[in-house]
Image 1: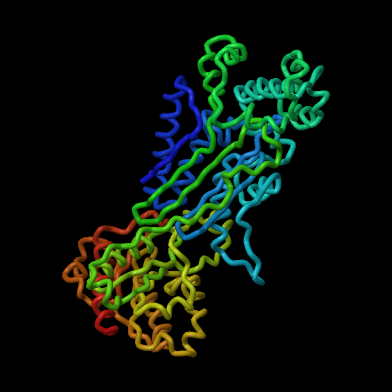
Image 2: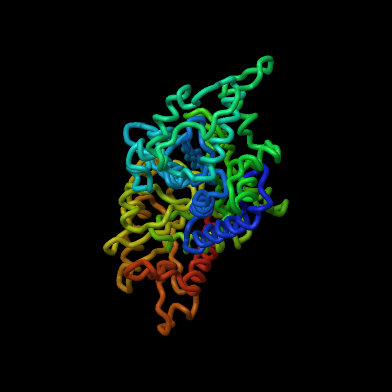
Length: 508
């Protein structure tokens, strides 16, 4: 499910078709991200990027201008596991939501010496950080002053800046009384213009005088309708009058919520802030929100009161193949009455820039397991990709962290199984499983292979497939382009069901 909006304020009827086109394109972008193996956070990012690239909303390109004529954007994302990232009052980042998403994903990775990764970055430092992560952003603060500005936004800025200056009792050249305007925006405008387009008489004596910054909500509020006469007066000549009138119907933060087929959930927002805002103003958009809480699974009363056999399905996946098997394993476990599976991933140890060079997709929202959590489960199924005929180092690093459990004998007698992914046909399907068995043996765990319980399909040589007597498996291909087949997914589901039956008996 993908739900999104292009602003909760007033919208122009003349632009209704454009809004619908933008929303349709955003939905398709989010769906494409999910179809390509991305998680809910990837879909949210893809959808909001489309709305940021359009000048019809108040996010990214075409955003409201600040009091001094600049665009400073806010964006935030949050995933169901609590991962959060935000960008505030940031100029010169092509897609602010993308920077927020990278912050959220990096927030799942630990830093050495107890350091804590940032959840929010603000101002020009956010632009510099985005550049360091390979995102599209202005090369300098001076260049950033010209980003995301559109002719329509500048016309609206001139109109309401003039109204504010008149309301404050200013006279003469407005730029002479607001030198930061010329300094900040002259380089960004093709003609170097910094002053307001025309001089008007200030408000008559006796009327209330206000500082321009106190008029943000009156002149640039998100919900304010604009007088039609003033609208006609400020509309440009030619056929743009109706569209320009729509530009004064202010709209606010765009947003998106995604519930992915795998059950993961994420949400995101992006905004250019209110018109004529003070530079550096952080809008509500980047503020942390409560984490989404998945609905509990319904269960019969008798079963809910009985002791459940809890099984952890733990995987590492670079390109999504092992995770696809893991999801089917979870289905198989949950099909056995009295058994309950929880899906985890192990900690990624590769830096984000290395993963990007490898072409690895964004990580899923599944929680990262810790060694201490193993004590809470009755059995374990590990999804392991092959590296040179052995388990991936990320899985090995996790198992190496279980020394305290080995010392306490916490895992003795508990069942464990494996399912794997390899690049091409070869011995790695079995040798990877064997490298896991040595770990289980030292913990005194009970290794549970599937044998040939899956039936005749394991003997069938007419179809290329992964899997062995040790457990389910898939072939990713030399480039990782091959996806698990229906037969391989069916085997993974069978393994989950078979393993759950054994684990339930051992836990009884």
